[in-house]
Amino acid sequence: MKEYLITQENEKSIHIPMVSMRGGDVSSIVAKYMKRSLEGICDNFGYIEPESVQLISKNLGKILTVDGQSMVEYKVKYKFKSIYPSPGDVYVCVIESITKMGLVCYLKGTESLDASPLIVIVPQVFLGENSLSSFSEGDTCKVEVMESRIKYKNRQIQSVAKIVWFKGINSRQTIMEPGDRSALEDTLIEKISSSPYIQGELHTHICHKEYPCTNNENGIFLNVSSLSDEHLIEINHIITHIEEYNQTFVDKELQLKELTETNTNQPKDVHLKPHYKPFSLTPFQRRILNLISS
Figure 1 (spheres, helix red, strand yellow):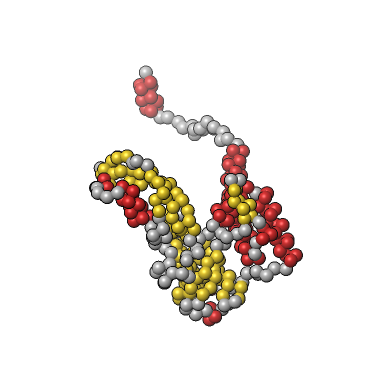
Figure 2 (spheres, rainbow, N blue to C red):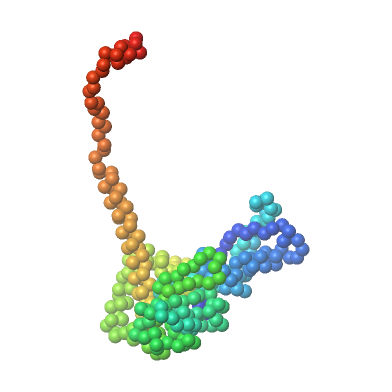
């Protein structure tokens, strides 16, 4: 079972050539077309797992012409399984190779680096307390994603990560003192409850994690006191990343505002009349000017 996959739903319009609609059940043709065009590649939902796209519904469709070709447009609703590695996400990986730069890993549960939807690069500076010689090809480790590169229609996602667990050595503090845990719980509760922005950004992440929470029409209620130490620290990492990203955006907005105000407060240019240096004319030049002006 691939625990890293999440199930999602989406609606979109698709265009199928008229020649492809001949013969067979229409729903089956649409489903096959969607599987062929969506599975095994990346889009704005991340990497779409092969054999996971399922057609839920479609409209009757309409015929139109696209680039001189007759097409049938369908509005479809479908569900699928995908992986979208975000900063703070933790994955179990297998080490494929070791270089001077660090580790190259793939997701545990896949057969090889080529078959993995996620290629994980762990630079040497992010090996935690371990040295490069501590690792061997084929070893299992846990990594925490720092940044990811997802290119449209690529067949793999590239992520930069850091080691959080290897051979019993946990670079995260997952056994916390009661006082430290209580202080962290209070901090998280205050940050989440006081910031709608953090609530919105955190919502997507919590939806796809097995955190103790209650889900109803009003939203998700996270039971912070029931979180494990590891989950508590993980959420703290995510919130820190959200705050840093938001602060960067705010700083840029303030810089833009200051620049605009500076330009607005500058004195307007004063229009100055040109000054010409006097010069003398010869008698012949005066005669020419008199003839022109008369």
